[in-house]
Amino acid sequence: MGILNPLYDAVSWIIVQFHSLYGLVFDKDGGLAWGLSIVSLVVLIRICLIPLFVKQIKSTRNMQALQPKMKAIQERYKNDKQRQSEEMMKLYKETGTNPLSSCLPILAQSPFFFSLYHVLSYIAQGKQVGVMSQDLVNSAQKAHIFGAPLAAKFTDSADKLASLGASVTDVRVVTVIMIVLMSASQFYTQRQLMTKNVDMTVKTPFMQQQKMLMYVFPIMFAVFGINFPVGVLIYWLTTNVWTMGQQMFVIRRNPTPGSLAFKQREERLKAKGKLKVEPAAAQEPQDAAPVKRSQPKRQTKSQRQTGGPTQPAGAGGTKPKPGGGAAASTKPKPKPSSGADKPNLSKKK
Image (cartoon, rainbow, N blue to C red; front, side):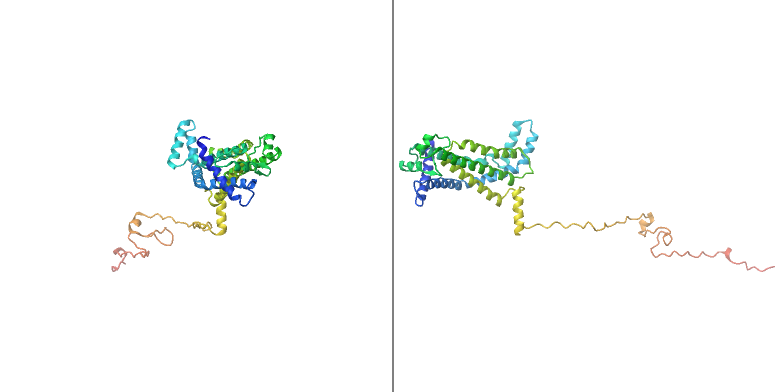
């Protein structure tokens, strides 16, 4: 078995422990006890991977927040791929973002996936594997899920399936249904991420890549699924359903700012009165008449020096003289009398 022997032992030991538990309720040799053991293995692994999932969510959000900067770098150095890569790595380092963090949950559970595949392959051959005894191997080999043995594959021959106590029709119908469900759950999970939890106002190559993966992953599951034993299909279908439910919970409770899910969450909080709406700043009414400001009238130099009022000529008075106040009289003063104005009182000769 090589260096993966400890993983084979760990996977087989976990399955045996769950099988002992479910064997108290269901038939020990039945497919329900063994199938639930595989499902419980998935649940246990995914619970242990929750910290990595949280890290994946943070990394995905950081990547989305960096999309405008990444696009600016691509446009600036579109003719220099090496400089573009250097600037991208510099941006990742400055922001503490790891593009591979979004793949951590899948990478972390891959060893368990291959270990389970190996264990089921040994069960199909009737060989002991890990901590499983020969009696347990024989019990698991006879276990059927809807008429399909746990170790059977879509591509198995009729003779091999007959040795496992199953028919080609039963195995292929069950495997096709499980492959379709597995691909559909993967597609819905990726589509949910793209349509609800991504800010669609920012158009970048990263978004185009995610859209492409939305169609590529289901096709990959459909192609490789025909070579997976029924037990492995149960494992992968369970982990897809877990991922879909986990993502739905995160998108609903803590969506990405600017996304459709974020707007829907704000609307729900407003409807429940849990989101306080900031009052808009008071604005001047548009119907109010604008205030007219009168321009100061021109004054003469003497008026500016004395501070006298400005009164246009012909507007009810005469033009004030310098030094005159506002109460200065405009009545003309009498002329002083002179000798020429006095009457001639000389006597006649």
